[in-house]
Length: 80
Image 1 (spheres, helix red, strand yellow):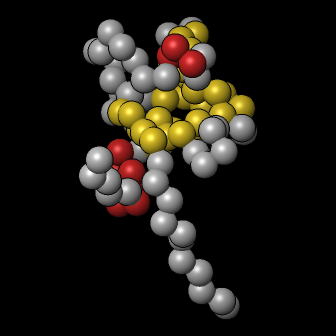
Image 2 (cartoon, helix red, strand yellow):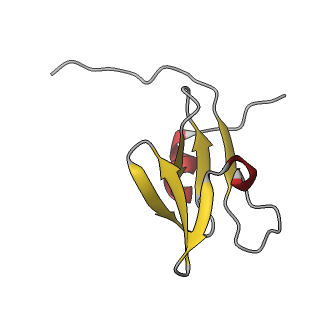
């Protein structure tokens, strides 16, 4: 089997926090509240998001959620 490495890509991300008055990306129509749950619209459809999840803006401007443990294992903060 061939081996591949992920290309280094800088992403934009914000951590979703239920206790914040300024929820990430709500002004862009990305996050919505319905039937007692928060959702994010992705290319694959609506996905439930939880407190502490990261909302990532992809390389094509798409949004998707990422659990905190996966985010920490995959990304590191960029200076500037």
